Image 1 (cartoon, rainbow, N blue to C red):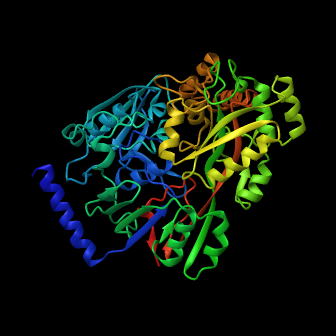
Image 2 (spheres, rainbow, N blue to C red):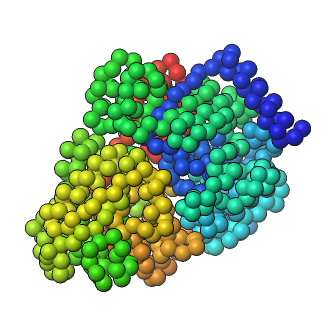
Image 3 (cartoon, rainbow, N blue to C red):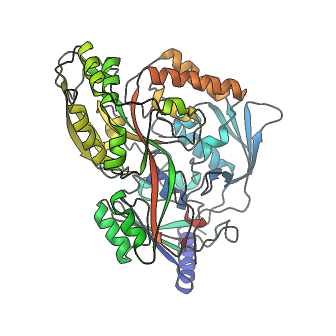
Length: 526
């Protein structure tokens, strides 16, 4: 049978099944997935949608534990400590009926290591991916990698033949504005198959009747209708009216209203995510300020002053209505390397901040543009608005430019912003992930989200060494040493750790996942 015939047969089968026993879940959140290309954008809502359609070798369940997905067994090779061996799940098929095997894994991991991939940092230590037989994959690393499985939980596997047939071998250049077949179409092995896709409007998924996990997971959600609703009031109104069943981001000002509504619940948990501001400290001059021939952000005293001007407790109480935890480092508490003393180090001291500004030669202040998303993080634009007023107290006039995330994130990736908001979750639960993306010098393998232009070759060597340090206490010491530099240099201005508030109909049964990724195969109804 051809791919097209198989796909049609699968669609008819699924439609018939749904008409007999359908349980539709109508899902909404503030922003849409940026793309369906599984390696183009390492971004929360993007990977959350991908997890319904595609699968990695290993994944995290709704509690955050690593569990088997397309691989059933894994571990370092007994013959060579530089090789991780993964035994693949047998009998798995893609949505179009094609068989899954090791060549698909090799193809996908090789693809994820290319320059346009937003996942390449996770595979920076990989030398080669081998497929010695159809059900075995070997990942060869530059020295023993103690946490390789942690790096693969969002590394989605594509069908090599499908990619080749649809001119989708190359990763979409999202920042460059490229549109590709893989950006709008998907053929995965996951629990749900793509039925229709209207970016920023609606995406419909239907149950994969041939899913390998049927019988192993509840699979009670048989259809998903995903609608991004940017406006907070409209999103809440849709939940209250019964238009949608589940929203991932109940606005903090509406928590009581939703929780008290008949037939609705709010379920809360700390999130594996920290919100912070990044600053361009590497360029000799800034494009988005009023200081000619100099970069005020290159001066440590200015960066420290800006951090001291931010009143995190006020943001927590006024903007977040108590739904945040002030942060002093850009690591969530879930992560190996998080340090309570560092995380409590941020202080508000406007008088000291003014002194630092004067010492740096900016006693009269300066003006600068702050780029901020308005549909990605909880109260993102409101946090930025609060920061505008706080920074004004030390003479910094901030011009706020808030945009949807689809326009905001490319500004960081293409180095067009000098001062910006970013949030960072850590799917590996290890500091190496933070360092690889946000601290390491930006090059072909590292630093794709490092918009600070910070470069420290000595620190880069230490960061890269983490990938092959198998003495875990020694590795933890190395991680702490790197954090000491990050903190001393005030690379970023940490704001707070997010708290998740999921709103849903009371009959929906699930736990709140710390990574804010709803995996609907685990959901059930009562």
